[in-house]
Image (cartoon, rainbow, N blue to C red; front, side, top):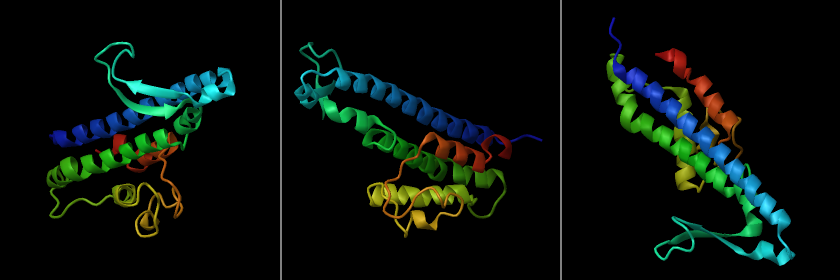
Length: 182
């Protein structure tokens, strides 16, 4: 029996997104370690008030553009688990994953399975609710959206910022049984 290639394509996409999340989290953690060390070495303490510029090239090159800046002393917290940088990157995983499912795979998989209506997987239904809170409530869980989760109902409490750590990503991948489903 020939299996529609959409199934493997979908598994590959989920795997790539989970891997991208993992490597991004690891990279941010390494950056946090680096900047935490610099903050600890800052002398006098006011050096922690200095500005760190993020640039697209060498800082001394005339064509280099600084496109982001932070206070040096704030970087360890911003880059930590649950800090704004890791939180935003983790929320990008959730938004991208749901978008891939809804825009590129759901209809194709439903068709390949011979379904008359779109396939419904509770894990992706929960992701839809999470996505709505990220987009419409600036990443803060609400009873109207995240509160309706069925599979991952313990992930977020109402009013809590939504941070998708590696445990949540692993739990999601296990819940959809991505490597055994198709």
